[in-house]
Length: 90
Ligand SMILES: [Zn+2]
Image 1: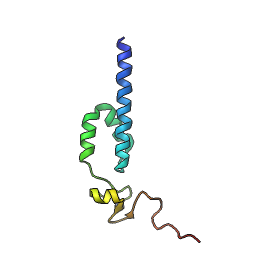
Image 2: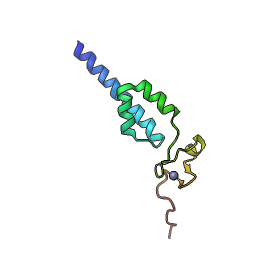
Image 3: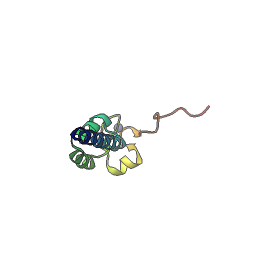
Image 4: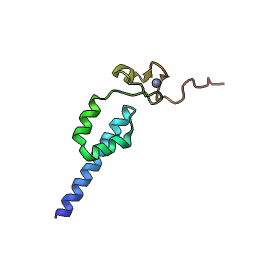
């Protein structure tokens, strides 16, 4: 029975790891690092992540929430929408 409880706890920890990882990815942060943090201590990881701002994936500039939602970096322009300065259709 103890082994079953252990597996349940591991499963729950893994789910939290995925949840925290996905939330981190939405903020352009490393999903693996945050996922691991979520497995170790999902509660602390969620709180810390909630206070972390969006981050530009290119220059790692800390974006404001408005810039993060608009996916626009003041230095790189639009982010997360494929290539910047995409070639116009021929
Ligand atoms: Zn940038």
